[in-house]
Image (cartoon, rainbow, N blue to C red; front, side):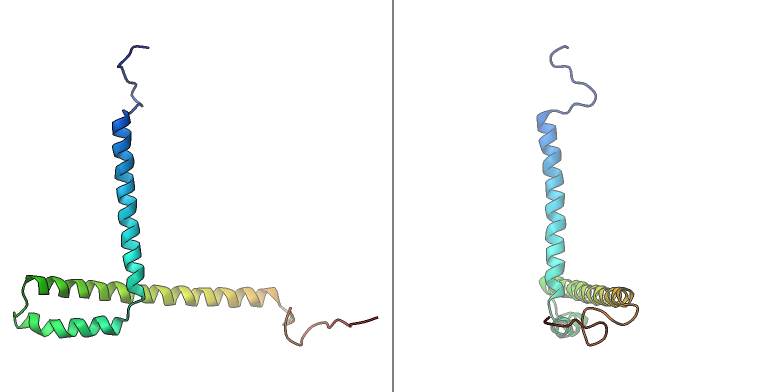
Length: 126
């Protein structure tokens, strides 16, 4: 094997590190975005709506500068994400409830089960 000649599948160490770093940056970006969206899900949408309502008339009148317009756009985006996350959370909760009810009904077809007064009772003592 000749020195300095690389096969078609081999990468230099530097190229490998660059590729790993690129993957790591992409992963970190996804994680930050997900964390930001999850934090928005806990915010109050009415508060965001109030802030947008406060800035919207100023924008319509042309009294907002560049920073104000940028803030308004960010608030609108945050409101959209917040409402979407709330809807997703509610839909997931309803699906979990429906699945739990369906599983509960399938587990006890006769209505008896582990709890309640229905079903067989055990006697204590001898």
